[in-house]
Length: 308
Image (tube, rainbow, N blue to C red; front, top):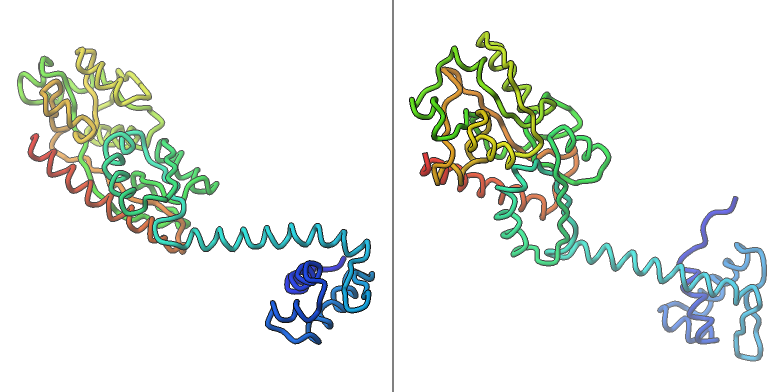
């Protein structure tokens, strides 16, 4: 099987077909006439047939040459389009940013981050894929996204984790709940309380379950939902309490429709960060995104402290 045709020979062939002159072709390519002639002979040898006929001083295409010309023009246009596309992506503010993030991050943290990001990269195409942390790791594996904002999980040497911020989980209750009225959580009542949580399959629930097992508390009554907004509404109705990071319920804590209470004597903290393939250097757009996430999370935590 023969290899691909030489692109420089194809370029000379297309120009020669247009000009009909070795002299004019050589001038356009800044080559000698002899160099163009040798290039065409090499091309004819490569394809195994005659492509050109000389009619006086004019160069004409054979039937095989006409066939090659159609394909050569398409090939050269595609090559030019590829080059233009690569140069386009290399210019400031252009390119693509595919982000994976959990639903809570998408709702609370990403909007201000993406607003500032678009000011710096107005022509960048942004794609956001929501999912649980484990789903997002799978998305990175299948290269559906470039970076993912996830909870830190057991080490995977394939990926690098860039810390962004840490949070602390707390009980979230209605202000009419007895715990909120008393301002404390009786340890003996935790196991008997209706607990409304976000998916038992989530990494956060595993952290919560492990936390209480170490306290010799088994969480018996659990209502599982797939939406943080639905969880907050059910808690407001007094159907149970939830466990989540206060920043997720920041607005509700501010207007006092929900109350945050400590889990217990020990704190349960989580680490959030950006996950990407180890060894792959972040693009300028990705580095900017990471910096904006850190700034936005700092603002979020300061606002939360003011609410508390």
